[in-house]
Structures are given as C-alpha cells and as structure tokens.
Image (cartoon, rainbow, N blue to C red):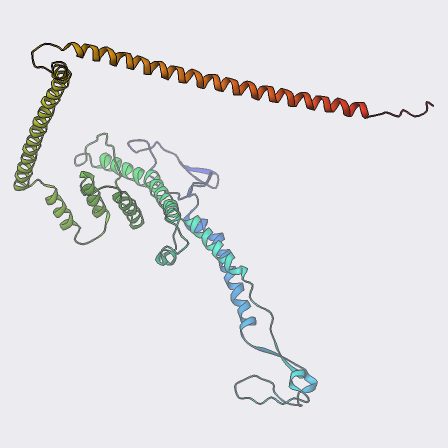
Length: 393
C-alpha cells in the first residue's frame, strides 16, 4: 500500500514469496513509535553539546584571566600619554606609581569546570559505548586495583557485546534471510528453495581478546606445569593473541604434546626399575620382620624357662637331684616375712588415717570455741547498750 497526502495511490498483494517486506533496518537503540530508533550520535548529542559549551566558556574565561591588565588613575597620568604595557617601556606618573597604577585581574578560572568536563566526557562514552584511547594508553595507575580494572573492562565488553548481538539479531540475520528468499524466488535453478537456518559467527575484537588473555593468564598461574591442562591453557592464550608467528608457536606446542617413543620407553624402564626396587625393599623389610618375630618367640621361651632354672639351681644345693629340706623352710619363712611386711604397711596406713581424723576433730573443736567466744562477746556488748526513748508527747 502506497499512501500520499491521505490518499491511497497503490494497493496490491505482496508479490514476495514469504509475504514479508523487503526492508532490513538496524535501530541502535530501540524507541517506541520510531522506525530508526535512536542512533549513536543522537545519544551522545546532548552530552557532547554540554561538553562543548563547558570548554568554550572556559576558553573565553582564560582570555580575561591569563593576559595581564592594569588599573590606572587617569588623573595621575601625563596628558596625551598613550598607556600600554610592553617590555622596556617607561611609564610616567604624577606621583607615586604604586598609588596610581596597579595590576587588575578578573579572577581565576573555576576548577569545577575540569570536573564537569570529565563527567560530561564520561557521559558521552557511556551513551555511545566508546572508550577513550588516551585513557587506555595510560595503563593502570598506582591506585588502580586488578579487580577495578576487571570490572571496568567487563562493563566495556558488555556494551560492545550488546551492540554486536543487537546488530546481528536486528539487522544481519534478517538481511541474510531476506536476501536468500529473494534469490530462491527469482533464481530457483541456481538457488533451490529449502528451509535454511543461518548462524552468524563473529570474531572477537582487540579489547575482548586482551581481556580473555588476562583471564587465561591468571588461571595459568594456579595450574602446575606438570598438569595436562597447562599446555592447553598456553595454547588457548596463543590462539587469542594477534602475533605473526602464532601458527609456528601452535605447531611447536602440538609437537611437544605428541608422545615421544624413546621417552616413553625410558619412562617405562624407569618405572619398571622403580617397581623392582620397591619389591626388593619390601622383601628386605619382610625378612627383617620375620627375624624380629622369631627373636621375640625366643625371648618368650627363655622368660618362661628362667624361673624353672632358677628354682632348680637354688633348691638343689647338694646336687643330688632332689629339693633340699631347708629350701622349703626358706620358702615358708619368705612367705611369712612378706605377710608381716604387708601387715606393717596396713598398720601404718591405719595409724596415719587415725592421726588425720584426730587433727580434723581438734580443728573443729577450736572453731566451735572461737564461735562461742564471738557470740558471748556480742551478748555482752548488747547488754551494755541503753536506749533512751525520751519523754512521751
């Protein structure tokens, strides 16, 4: 349908295959009821205009605050003299010069204009999604932390990725689909009609590559060199870098990751030798354990036979093969002495317990007498006190 000045000029059925409009547009910022939306320049227009006004006002003020000016008393200057300030000029005054001439300044440029200019510049960058190249070239300052840099880089990456995704979904994919449909409709022999699904694959920008390389480098610091992931991380870092010898470096890394037959054989031989050494050490330790076990058995047998040998040695003094009569008497006497010693120990313990009980009783008796004396003294003091009630009103 074509309408002009409120009248329909043309109306016909859609001649295209998928009944779509052959129009593909990309609004950078979607605005309701506006086909083109809001562009990058339009978003940063007001902030840039305010920034220009701020800088122009500052430049205008510099003309009044930078160049020297003089305040002169006209009655103190000779008649007809053209007053101007230049190097080597002699200035004539009627009277003291300090009373008739003085430097004059309108003031100083307000420092707040610097802060306002920086804030406005930041607003322009936020509105347009750009990044100041001069600020990035400075690098991190002394008071900038790694976390702060990562956060700022993350915000930049988010804006760029949002723009890229919006461009792909709103413009690039519809454009490819509509173009394919037109080729299928008007040149079906070369482009047969089929249901195609298009996938847009884009490469990372310089800032995104640098950001991912920083993250991979931080992860690489906590991975040991012997780990299999160490080589994969190095390979990923090199793949993200824009260097001329990237292919050679990747080929060298792939060659290093390939197994070496000679190295494998040497490793197998070393592993086998290590295993044999461990087996020999285990056999030696087991033999030492068996020897210690047999020695312990020998000591147990000797400890069991020693009392019997002692009895046989000391009970048969005349070597006739029979236990002597006096040996039995000695055994009985030893048992009696042991019983007497045990009785003496019990007697001593009873005496000590009785002594402790007696001391405790004496201490309690002393405490009771002290308490009685305190009570009697308090009674005497109460008896000595007289209470004067005074006359009854």
